[in-house]
Length: 506
Image 1 (cartoon, one colour):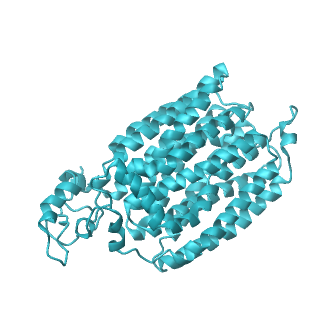
Image 2 (cartoon, one colour):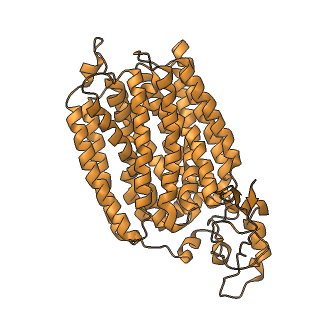
Image 3 (spheres, helix red, strand yellow):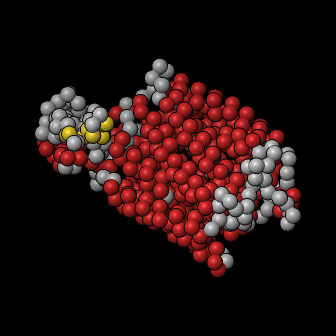
């Protein structure tokens, strides 16, 4: 039977060294910033400890499973190359529409998320993935390319909001010394969704050497994405989240459209150094088109593409685990860890993409587009080499994304500001995706696309280096974090060790 931990949690004012103003007494702070007492109680099922409902770990797991079911299935579908179709043209055009809208919405998504809140933003965001999948099911029967393009544009709107809300939870909810682990936990659960999603077409097509997936694959994806949209309503509002030390997420208590639009501009003014990360943002989705369409789709039949997808997303789980935990190693100061992460990223960029160059020299778009071209199967001699390359591509993606999120989280702990950072990230990332999907739709040479990937990744790292060297501090003072909100230090500070009527978050 589940047991409930009834230990007391702290008052938001108990540790303040200054006399309290009547406007910030404990009861008013609790009323504004905390939810119902049951939200803060831990439970045990046998030896297993279940975090409190309104705690960062519980909320992170929920949003990870939302992304497991929505973007995870999207990744599995696109990882097949061409959205599971024989030809990538329709998929490329749909994704151009998707990322064109995403780029615009993403840049302002922090403002929208701060104003609407987590649950509304995520639930609306999840619905677009179901419509997107349905459009390919329709295309299988009527070849109407307009529906996937419309669905791509709708998903651009929805995904821009979903990913901003997800990023806000992932890097503003955890304490400073746990951000790497939280990123890795999210990335592992999220990519496990893509692994399972890739197993669907693998099971459906394991005895097929055809080019396109069947209807059952799309129907399975539709059901799962609808479940993900519904799951987002399990989340609590960010203002109710309380960490184990009693501290709260720093936000605006009373956001308005005006305050959040001005906050977007203020972020660019006060944290202008973040532009040094923009090239890394731009490169972060650029290579997907090359890997999915110009490697997986171009060279392999459908069942082997599905297997490659399983391996690609599985390796992301390992990459996120290794990098996420390494970024939180307490034996080294955070500024040292940031520099080490940059150095490791640069080395593996040269090593993995150097191996990719050796592979890409072996074929061209003209060769793989020929009607008599026989695509590689996992039983084909020589498959092991490209299989391992694809595994390393997946692990590299996880390393890149984990480090970018961690770099942003190292600049501030303010949830309002981080929502804008994530909005910049997803908007600029999507702008890059628009360009490369269009380049691929125009049938650019594979080698040109490969070179653009490698060059953008290496260049992005070099441009980010000044920020890594000069702006990542070992800790960000609480006084700096509250400057960008209408909250006070007393309202958000850690409060463990002081008695109050509220239950403690375990």
